[in-house]
Length: 229
Length: 116
Image (cartoon, rainbow over all chains, first blue to last red; front, side, top):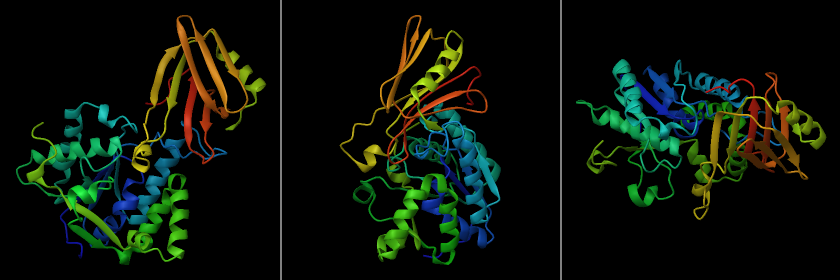
């Protein structure tokens, strides 16, 4: 599938690097097409566990490093509207739910996006991913004219429960930018990238797919994850 | 951070005793533990910027070490401590890093609050 033009794309994820693996090719393509893209990153990944041994960072210095990496990832994608929302890693699900919806509603009202990209509720694995997805879905649910809502799902039961992704974008043209976005988060992705390079050299098609395709599910309003909020 | 040397770390722990200090204590297996290993029981705890005043702090054992703080009415302890640092803001940061470079436990004390 080719990536359609959008009036404005809003991407909402909780951690620096959430954008890199799943959607950086799509973001880059939109920017190249002249579609404005805003990335709201809710935390600075303060609780990341990759600190090295011997350590290259402490619990207290990690956010400074990850903030720089997030900016470098944005630069790699050509993204200029990066919002750091100031929440703390691993605490999003404990914030007031209505406050979280309000945070999303404010962004949506300001930017009037024609497409929003986030995680798929119940298929997003990490509690921060789930809380982010819930807040976005709730905010969009209340809108009269809902934008396209593309969700990333990677829980182990995704294929079984949701089937194949209904949106698959070819991102080969921006492969380098995607690789650079992933590399920008080097403090957290070094070990994954090493493994990836190794698999690519062996001609692993699944890994190659990461750099050629990005997959989304349209949010299924007729199978909403909750009856009411 | 550097590897814990019991005698040196003990000096640092003694220096904070009897003073109001902000505590950060964390244990973690990471949020993906159950994703990668479905039978894994993922448990952890996190506390940040709670003020304590310990009368005795001790680092014990071979690496990974155990560190305990005795309070007037209770205790704080962490096990699995491998590294420590007195950072540029005078905060005592202790951490346990596993063989793959992932943090498993952190115990930190500071006279000023840690960031949010």
